[in-house]
Amino acid sequence: MRGLTFALVVASAALLAACAEDRSVVDLPSPSPSATALPPTTTPRPTRPPTRTPLPRPTPRPTVVRSSGCGIEHARGDAIEAIEFAGEVRAYRLHVPARYNNRQPAPVLLNFHGYAQEAAQQEAYSGLVPLSEAEGFVLVTPEGSGSPQGWDIVGVYDEDGSDDVIFVRDLMSQLFAKLCLDQRRIFATGHSNGAEMASQLACFAPDLVAAVAPVSGTVFQECPGMGIAMVGFQGTEDYNVPFEDSDSATRDWAAHNGCAAEPVTTRAAEHVSREAWSGCFGNDVVFYVIEGGGHTWPGAPIPGGAGPATNEIDASKLMWQFFAAHPKRQ
Image 1: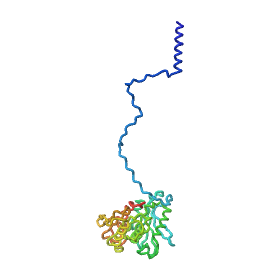
Image 2: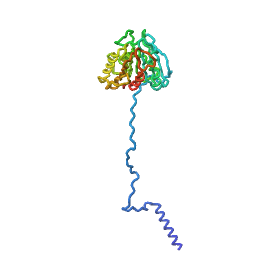
Image 3: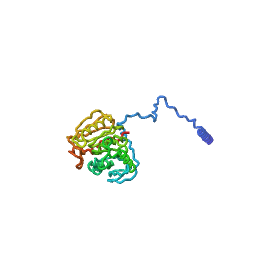
Image 4: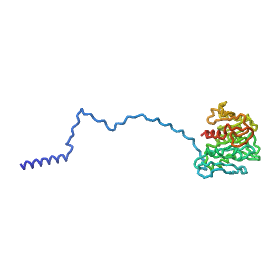
């Protein structure tokens, strides 16, 4: 009996040793043909339509051309500064709004006084300083030349022999060097002779200014350059600059800008009509006609000019709305 038990133990040990040396001898049974296989776990999920409508892509902002003065600190508020031009020193009033940021290019508005006037008078009469604070543009109000002071307008009167277009270019070069300005948003306005100066810049410096707003004195000088956006203001009872002169010049500007032959006229106020030319390819022309108005600045905060004035519209606010919509085209 002991011999049989010993033999069984030896046989079992031999069998275990054989399995350890070659495990491939143990085979699993194959599944029967009727068995259902599970789907692979890598099957992709069905594509579902988006649950939200994609938002439209934002309209790209126009390119800002920064001046070299970006990063240079400059005082805010009012200052009287000067520039040497053609052998004389000419002053200009500068208002830098409180919100000015020397790393964010600001727009500029050039503001020209009338004949025999001064920069301080024009700054106060136009009411543009509070608007500068509200809208964040830099306001520049230069002094003219001669005695009494004025602006030489080529083909109209230039008895002083001062090239005021070059003067403005030099002035802007000085401002570019010390202020952070947007060179695509330089605008010009003025009253009377100053309005003619703004028109002249549009004619002979269209590379510099983006749009102009002559008040009581639009002129057209057979301009050789490209069209410039313009918004004008004129009273029908202006005896200093006849209404017919500004009306004719505005129509010449519309033709120069490639606009439609006739404007669309709407009512801006009880005694103010708005004439707007279409088809101008961005260089729009708008003309506010003040019925019974004199040689004045509509909506001026203080008395000035000559003849009947109106407060039915505010020329300063209207021109800035126009300027904001007309940066220089690329």
